[in-house]
Length: 75
Image (tube, rainbow, N blue to C red):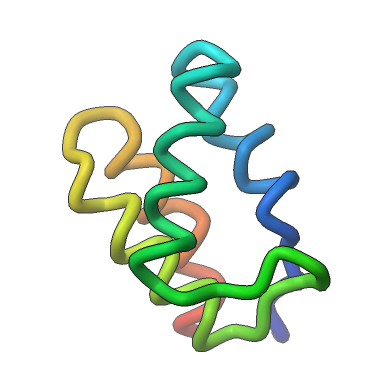
């Protein structure tokens, strides 16, 4: 099964399910800068994995959600 492409906005929505919208936007923006991910198109698998890795560094529930998002991309 191929992983679904996600945009950064969709990642914000996913992270926003466990934190405030402003915090979700901040952590995804920070992670996307660290991962050097594009913000103008859906992420490729390797880009998604880099963003999820950066998100996981946040720890706690954000890390758990990042791991859930990344897992299908690894299959």
